[in-house]
Image 1: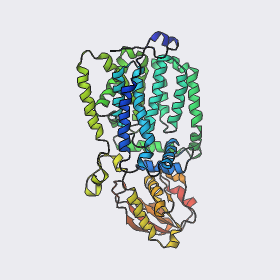
Image 2: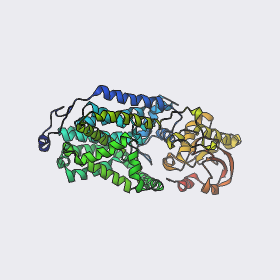
Image 3: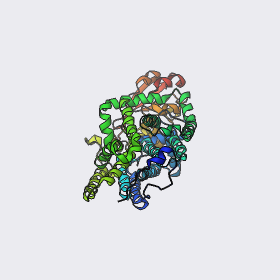
Length: 508
């Protein structure tokens, strides 16, 4: 068994350690085997079903490419635009970046274990725990796919800096932070809590390194364009923060945040590794230099739990805990019992994780109108978009040709508007609009628009601006969120869109 510990003397004095000193070699063969298997599974299942609602929105946002958006920075819309142009109409093609990024996350977890002194077994266990966790849901192109991996990269660089005192790593951590900031505005929470943890527990020398602040400056400079967009548009991201907190409250608020967040690490190995890893960060003599990471984990979970964050917000910390747990299990095994426990535990976790995959063919699925619910929100959000578009097309074509020329599509939800924007042109439908969340910022109907086909429920306050609004159909969708979605035709617009549209804006 290879054991390695950080030599505290040179680290304390700030002398860089020789590359490879005090750590095992990277077990590239078995690590790449595990991560390759993860990538293959994601690739095989990424083309199942259809586009997720948020993915359709990212495509729509990419076609309105800007420095920022109401509900996220520009990286995901840019990726969606690139993939949709490279692989038009391909669900698997759109999700290829998510597959690659998620697979890279498992490698990051293995490299963390190596930096902490873990040999082949610990590195493979770390990658395996990652592959079986909720993070492997990265088959979808989503901010929750990219952001945790970038957190992992930042933390890997910090862990490596503690061992080597190579200040170039701090500049790279700033650049990784900049990428994370183009995905979600969450990583500043990590840095603030980490900074406080370092002040309390050390190594305080980290905060005195000029290269740390050079990296921070680079992260800020790269993020300036999207921050300027937010400022110019009234900081809608702050409104989204309140919306997210309200949604979280509906699901139990801070009391359920911690248990639900921990469960996203994976029922079985992942949950055990998270709890054991956190405990060992505070207790292990070999990890004394990394105590600040334990306090960082506690602090970040506390911040997101108390402020109404979503349960996956802190999932970027899981790779650290996976790595610590794997290394500590390896260091402390005293007999041959561990493999007899580990293999069945990983096998059971693999079976549980497989339940989150879209195993059934689309033709075998039951639908809400038959009284059967989908197994999860992710699956249900991938169905019904073409049925919705066909229903809207039917209402649109029922209008006389002269009225069609003065008609636009309006939806109550950014998901519905995104679906119509994607599938509508092939059906001869006009432009799609919605006052909901980020779609509001893509613009209002033109002033010559006198009629709308409205989807997503009753038009509500818009009714008062039309001579007539009549229900013209219902989507026959198989999707819970659009099942029974009513279609309305409103004619004879009496106002000015430039004046009416701002009053329709909604973030929730």
